[in-house]
Image (cartoon, rainbow, N blue to C red):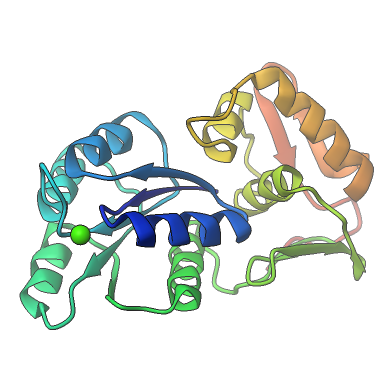
Length: 226
Ligand code: CA
């Protein structure tokens, strides 16, 4: 899952970037509204954390522009304490959730998980695909109850496939959602990661659809996820 963090406070940005990274997200950071609009316009994020008080272009205007252009990415806005009118204009501009500063990082992470879950149409927090389970709260996955030892990129890959299980996902889409913009993005490396993940979860769980991409499905005989 790839997140765009829009925040002009350097300390808070550093802290949130680290926390999001630890939680398994690929993170891009924009320190002002102009950069935020550009990145949101050109990169396919799964979720956006948007501070409203920003240099150059304010957060509400950025959000309004994205929504006018038809971008439906879930957006959580950060507002200053007591500024209730910010929340109203933020929601009117198309925000999906908000947090008032100061907040606990854990609460931000929980709200992002909920937004991602809702946007992918999942009702429960733990994702299941046959005997495969993934708990985004703990950033852990297991098969038949046996914990999997995954690198952070393998975890991201599995998380994305599980969020979109049953659908064919192209290599390009995976590259765009697993790596942040500073990463050396070579779509051939995706094949390597898929290969490694297959070794850990069972090769037949990830189907290669020739010329199109990959599809995660339960094994024959396992029940479909609820
Ligand atoms: Ca600010």
